[in-house]
Image 1 (tube, rainbow over the protein chains, first blue to last red):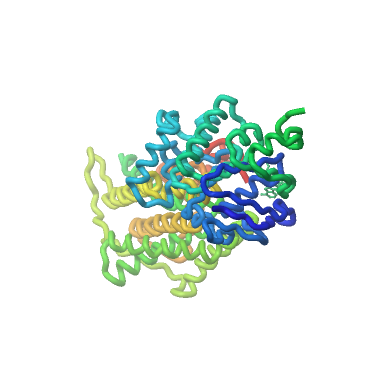
Image 2 (image 1 turned 90 degrees about the vertical axis):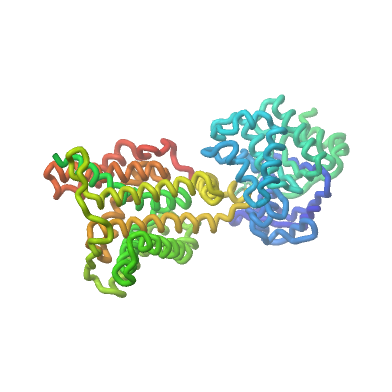
Length: 235
Length: 292
Ligand SMILES: Nc1ncnc2c1ncn2[C@@H]1O[C@H](COP(=O)(O)OP(=O)(O)OP(=O)(O)O)[C@@H](O)[C@H]1O
Ligand SMILES: [Mg+2]
């Protein structure tokens, strides 16, 4: 579904991604794990068109998207839940969800999907009219995910959904990621919480300073001594 | 007793400032640029209205609409030609460009039609004294006030309820997050310039009808005062621009009525200095430091 071929991404003179290649197949949950500053967010930003690769290509459903504008990429079915949620703080929960459906025109479909989001996250329903900046961190994460779902994505990019959340909420969020995936959305999940990520993922990539160092099935990585030492807190 | 007339004059004048201030504040909210050419869009709007009334014999409302439409396109052109390529430039570069743009429009206008003033036809709006509870009120001030209020209600509707309005708010809150929603930032910025400039155009026509004299440099002082109004209300805040404009108009009227009409223009700048000292974020502004 998604094929990244040898991309190099720069911020000015700093090279953040150095020849990254990876693949996500339809229906999978693929996770990308790595330490701070490894380039995870940069990769997702490049996939959604916020950053342009200097070289290399990104193919999505057989089309090159690395030269396209973010709105074209959203329309093609890739939704990105950014790091730190980035909900529109001065707007209500409902307005945030409406903005998630910005590229769509099917009013009745949008209404149905909004109900679906409220089913997935009943807390958002209770807070429909609340300004999203006043939501708790967990609720904001739910809103950011709900907002992305409103675009009806085929591929969902999630950047550290567990960041700063209590274990119980993290668990809920991950259950919902699995549920969304079962209902047919492919997921690329960036995480530092490698334990959680590997427990839901089919396959995984490990990124270090802009390079993919290890890749394999989630089970292989969970079993690997090297991974255990570096990312799973096992000593 | 003409205090009521003074108050209404003040509110009407203030509503003109408010219409101009809205453009400043919306543009600032979205690209963090003080568009110093905005006062000149107001001037262009006044002239378009004048030509529509005098040249084509149109009445007030069609002239207002033509002027608004023209200014909307004009504002978008200014943004596309001058500001768009500076979006990632330093603030000071953008500011200098805006000042340059302002001078270009002013002296471009003088080049095209000369510097001589023009007299707005006085009979576009009925000019009668209305007797209200024993007080005489000029019907023109009421018309002007009504026009401004209707425009502000339409603006509120656009910003709060329509898809483009929501996109506008989203882009001013978080540009990258807005991109991730599939919002075209370029289109949204153009839309903001179009709306802000249309309001300035309307303000120009209303101003012309009210004060009857227009000339190519007429935008400078009202532009600066509207900027003060926007800062007073909290730059970036739409309700702030409305309240700040009306407040400023009323203050000026009070200063005039108290017999200090020579000091009228100074009042605005005294207010600007006071806000910058005591409450830099304005009445409705949030007291947070700006993110870069
Ligand atoms: N806007 C930027 N300008 C310059 N350098 C940047 C920018 N954004 C990221 N970088 C640099 O690119 C590298 C990768 O950053 P990135 O945000 O992709 O890391 P990450 O893996 O997401 O880290 P984290 O887990 O902390 O979120 C870092 O060295 C960072 O300093
Ligand atoms: Mg990151």
